[in-house]
Structure formats: structure tokens, C-alpha cells
Length: 112
Image (cartoon, rainbow, N blue to C red; front, side):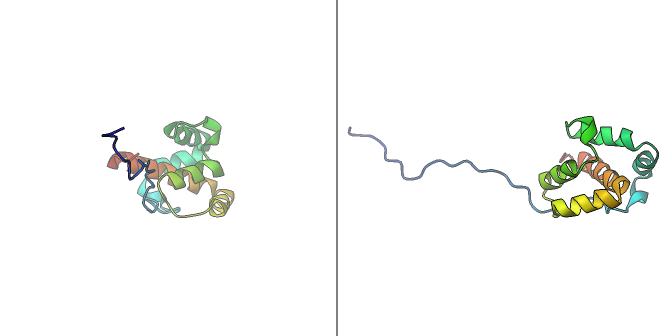
């Protein structure tokens, strides 16, 4: 048994946790991308499917609390499930438009 290496430190896997960030645009920043806001206002379900498609999810999930929470946690955006629920309950169009604007900005920056 001579010459056997002694392991002093076990290898570990590291999970990369995204650093805390913020939304690229505010909830009511419709003027920052009028096309997204018009689509959300007049064709909500089309925008919902586009957001879900961008995130590789089912078309019916685009405007859900689960989708907003998934997106927020993926990019380390502060918030809670309760805040996501309240935002979607009281302003579903603004919420969906904010997610889509954020996706578009992150695509432009190459971090989506």
C-alpha cells in the first residue's frame, strides 16, 4: 500500500447563485417599450404565449404567479410569492409587460 495518495479535501460541487439584481424596467414603465405594452393591452394572450415560449414553458403559464416567481428567482430579483401574487392580481397586464421588457433587455445584453 505504499505510494497511495491521501485525500485531504473532498471535491465539492458549487451551485452558481445569481447575484441580486433588479427588474430592467419598472412595473409601470410602459413608455420604455410601447410595442410590448400595446401587445399586452390588446392581445394579452399572444404576449402571454410569447413570454412562455421565451422561457420554454407551456403557453398557458405565461402570466401566472409561478412564471413570474420562476423568472424573478432565476435572475435573483428581490421579491416574494406574495408580492408576485398581488402584482398579478391587481395589474396582470403590467406584470406580463414587465417580464417581456425584461426578457428583451436581457437578450440585448446577452444574459438571457
